Length: 459
Image 1: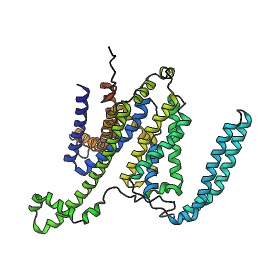
Image 2: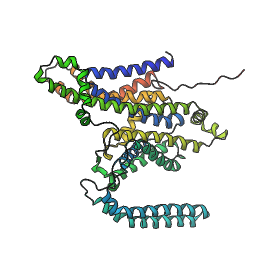
Image 3: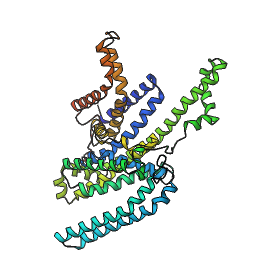
Image 4: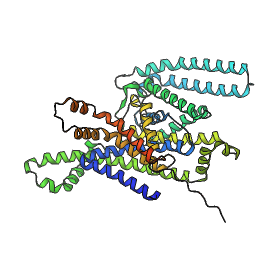
């Protein structure tokens, strides 16, 4: 099968699976899965940029996604005026102290000769700067967190439309990736993985404990939406009229006395579907833009250079390529895409919950998406995001159906049937392993392996 036909067949099969869920369960469930598949595909695309383009093993994905979630809070929530009045000045002074400490450290590092005196001077600057910063920051943070702690207890945000946070999330993640890359990209791949995982844990730990910034584990709920609310749709006259027109035949068969209640149920159901469709349209647009840009980058001279560095760093270095600088570039770009996906996920949820960012669990899922879809292939990463998230969500109902079918010969009071039905939810992990095993056995490069277009030599 040609590459084009294989790609079309794979995506057509994925569409068929989503349609099957729509008809067997509901359109609302299908669209909920579709939205999360779109976000997962964007996140997998970011990881593919790092691993598929340059071979960088980043296990800190959830940390960058969490920074995208922070952006949603800092951009969309309204500022808490009382909190700013209570501790805003102290935080501003502490920020100046941090900037001054960093600048003085850089100056000392560059001006002093290498040796013991430079180490002592840098240590003194950092220690003094730390304590001075804490002197101003601690009282300010305590004052901020004391302002109506049950409802606010944090500074809030800028009160802008939440879609701006998607850009801000990418910038936050890119900035953090630049700092991480400057420190860790010189490490060997296995050490880089450990370092990025540790940094991810540090980022999430900060978000869980710094209540003044994002309320910590108390969470931030009620984030604004880029799409209408269901209640607003139900109250607008045009939407019920549209639903009534679309379901005229169904409503005509209902008794006149019950028609109003039936229409109300349909309006509620259709409003949920409409909102999810709006989200799907926005997410799909972002995915298409990122996919087009990624494809152009991969097929450009820059993309060929990145693949050359990935395949043989020694040869690329011998040709004058700055390996560390190129690695830093691709690390920042991939992390920015993950940050955008993180902001979109928080937007979809409508709340920011730092406790849900589980680096080991969800990082594993994202990596499975890239491996199953096809490392180095952008469309493969997108397909992997759809496939893995679909089976991750549908594994439990599929497991219940399978166990029910296998144990149907036993009585309802049978210990074996009861035990199997109670543990059917564990089929999720089994199914993930089975999908990964089958793909690696029959298509080691993924469902859509990387395709390298080699230029023909001129006669």
